[in-house]
Length: 316
Ligand code: UDP
Image (spheres, rainbow, N blue to C red):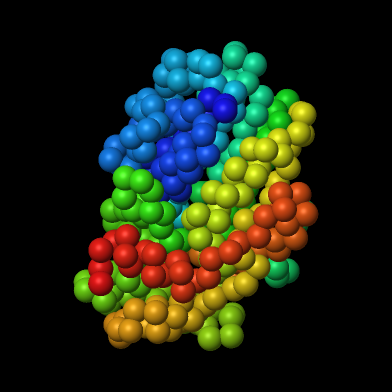
């Protein structure tokens, strides 16, 4: 059993990680400033430390006795990052520098970092391998790339996991952990909400893709956290690895809507809307490295992501 600090552990992905790490017998401390997370998403079996990455004292207090850090905390919305690039750099990059500096003080050198496919920008090759030279199309992706480079330049045993599109929900002992963003910007919860709220806006139908809508690679949050646990067990002395987490298959926005109509047995009202700033046309992962290094592959389908999200949101 190890004492693990989960930054951002009140958010969607971090709260799922904290809960599953506790299930696996770890001693978990959640560190979150609740700026976008929710206190009631924090697993009650974990210790909760309310604090910000921008507060070095708080980080130092939270790190006492910790042997590894799983770092999710940060701003994560592409559209917002285009409007507030400085905020994204400050919270994500400066905040992570504070975290790494505090870890150094305690000689903690093990970290799993929540990176993103947004680091790649809009590459011409598909699927995307980790060795391509990234050129992010938005400040969110740039901040994650800056952090990956920062981690690579210091003496940490670290794995940056580059998530493609995370979806689905986790049934923890204290209830469902799901996306609870306000406003919600992500496709799958918005598709489900469109059954009962406003029609789903399709952001662009003139992309260079087979049906004109953006193609993404969706991965279930429970599969994703399984990869984090494998990554924690695979940290190698003073080495930094970058590993994609996705399914290896792409679905267009229209294909996601069709799947949801089939899974939910309901019609999803849609309206065509302009392209969203910062969006690349296609992002599909090569998952060969995750398989070879972590012995990981996803087990849950897009249909499962849609049905779990529906149940978790209570929208039947
Ligand atoms: N999208 C959409 N309508 C929405 C939300 C998302 O058409 O209400 C599109 C978005 O433009 C992108 C894809 O769905 O092409 C996935 O977007 P999401 O925000 O879920 O994830 P991202 O790819 O930005 O990380």
